[in-house]
Length: 423
Image (cartoon, rainbow, N blue to C red; front, side, top):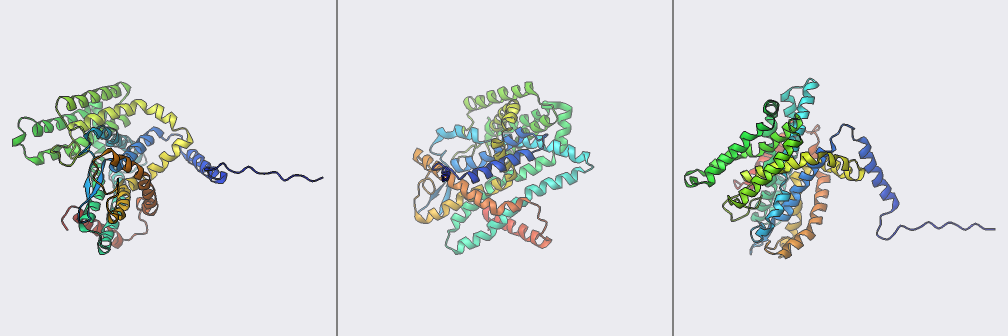
């Protein structure tokens, strides 16, 4: 009597082999198991959300056009499609990023001091973590520019690409400054609680009144720069208050409702631009430097974040949701520094092919939006590939001597000069 050989079922079409799924599942469960019990998953989730909003916003609300000479230039669909401005309200999440940054920084500084460290040592570590990826991307681009030029890429295209890279890096400089102010922010939070953020809001309101009010004609253009520090320090101070346990649910409701009311009033009665990002051709902008509308949005977002913290933390107890949050946080600076390069890497070859919808055509129609959405998965794949090669810039440069670090700094300075039009 013979025994029939059992037939193993084949994997369903379109599904990865069980071994791959098993490995992914194991990795997900391992990440979850290695997470300390005291880890605040909600804060990491908020940071990841704010981080992913940066490339999504730049890829969706930033376009490129091809001139008759074959060179690429920056453009924005918001110029012709102003009704898309509300999308920028959802994608402008730097307020959340600064909120989480302030909360994390004050706890980190406190823990560093408990272990016997100094404020200066803590700040040096923070600056190094932010500076290494910036030096990396700018040094690589400084080497790429002459190479691409030798291969026939127009100088105007290279300047456009350099501008794309520089655009998100302003954030790092501002973030370094507000990080250096953490001890003073913490002292103010302990003394005055949420009221410590009010002077920042008031100073931005005063500058906005001067540059947009009845005396605007007599106000010098540089006055708007006075909003640069308080405009972004506002959300950071809210985060410090949160970390110092001076921002509870009642205050969060005040921020949510008050911020939303101020946001609506500024749009409806004071005619602030509806877009949260700069739009070519408009004489007013909300983001460079931040206007009062940015602070109103940050207040509403911060209030919502505090109120949703517990629900988000419970949601991220699921390993499948927690794993991508961990990955995004581990690659934070890589995402910030290289996402525009990923888009440029797709558009540059297309520029030699001519008009490619969603890549090199003018962003003036809903058809362009549909085409751009179709290209965004490619941008994400390119970012992942670039990130695998450049993630090393986030790690300490233990093997790099002074000469290499100096060379990276020189290359970064040369690239900055080129991007800003000085070279």
